[in-house]
Image (cartoon, rainbow, N blue to C red; front, side):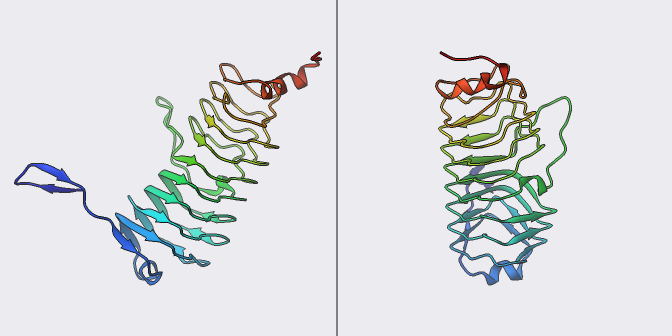
Length: 222
């Protein structure tokens, strides 16, 4: 953000467009950049810092991101399938229209939580494919999955309190010991959630998927 002192107002500073992979190799810190149609290769993203930047139509598939930080960034129509994280932070990051297949999200370094104030999960997903991803044991309070595909995703022992699964397909995803209190599944489909092994108080469900809640209770539907 640029401040015009004569007019005493703020003016949006233009983003720097980057289409050449050499720019990433030569620099360590990027602020207000837009990366377009780049193929990210193995070990290219190491000790890099990205602030208020956007990645459009970039390919991160099968690569590794080491000791890096993404803050206030957005990924649009990118392929990050089988991406591996090591000592990397993500704060206020949005994924839109991205392929995120087979990612172990537990390997990201998440910020510390403060007991007096619940922190909303720092990543949101819109129109994304997250099949075979792992979120086991994570604190994902108030996370948003919108118009997304989550096939065979691991949510065991995960805190999904007040999570939002809007128009999202959860076929064969795994919930066990999961905190789903206040979560919204009202427009989600294909989920199978056993109320006897998960916390579901205050969660929103709709038929016919909601019938899965009683599978472990020994109840017969006629």
